[in-house]
Structures are given as C-alpha cells and as structure tokens.
Image 1 (cartoon, rainbow, N blue to C red):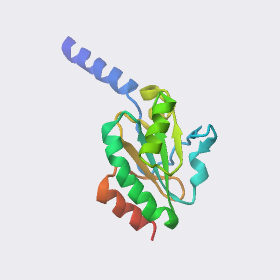
Image 2 (image 1 turned 30 degrees about the vertical axis):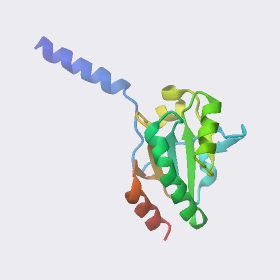
Image 3 (image 1 turned 180 degrees about the vertical axis):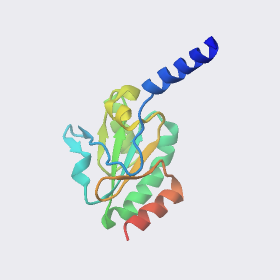
Image 4 (image 1 turned 30 degrees about the horizontal axis):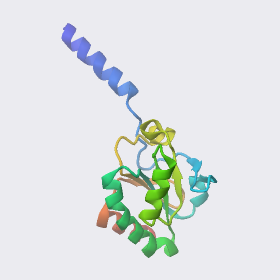
Length: 160
C-alpha cells in the first residue's frame, strides 16, 4: 500500500512539473524575440500566412541536416504564402549567426538564448529539437513535428 502511494505521488509530482506542450487546434502562443539585427520579430506579424515555427540550434546535428530541406521548402512556397519563423535556442550569438549564414537560412530568424530554459521552449513544451509547429493563416496550430514529404504535402494543401 505504501509503495502504491509513493508511486502515485511520484507520478503526480512528475506530471505537475512536466513541460506543457501546446496542442493542435490551439492558438499559437505569441513569440516576440530578437532577430539577427537585434530587431524584435513577433510571430503574430505573420498572421495571414501559413507559418512553420522551427525550433533549432547551431549545435544540433539533426537540425542542421534538416536545414537544406527547409531552404528548399522556403524557396518553393514563400511566394505562395509560406513563412518560416526560425527560432534558435543557441546561447552563443556568434555560433547562431554563423549557422544561419552557412546554412543559407533566408527566412526570419530569432533567438531565445537561454537554451533549454528559454521561455519559448517552456511555453511550447519543446523537449527535443528540431521541433516544429505548423500554423494556419489565423495562427492556430494545425500540425506538430511534421517532417519531409509529410510536411511539404500539408503545406501544399494549405496553400491551395
């Protein structure tokens, strides 16, 4: 009986303090972060477009491997109504900017330089990167962590 109570208490404690993940159908929480030049870029400023919020970092190998695909998507769909809001959790500005340049990321880039303790990761419940959230034209989350052809198929359907 005591073991059961202890297990229950541990479970309740763990779930109470776990990061809350946003969910599909929910309005995307606002993000307002500094861009490459120090200017503040608000996520809501892209309302009216299909937006992919892409959490990444310069030190994240899977993120960097995914960047060429995002470059392809952006070139193909930006003039049709797609925007990408690249959100780095890099703590070192020079490494972040170097990766943006090297990977030729031409879409808006912002940084929340507190790493895993960044307010944006806590708000969105990001526990691993790369992570992405696809938003409709009204700013509602319509998909989470889509990759590759599945992501492109969803973007293409939304832009029709």
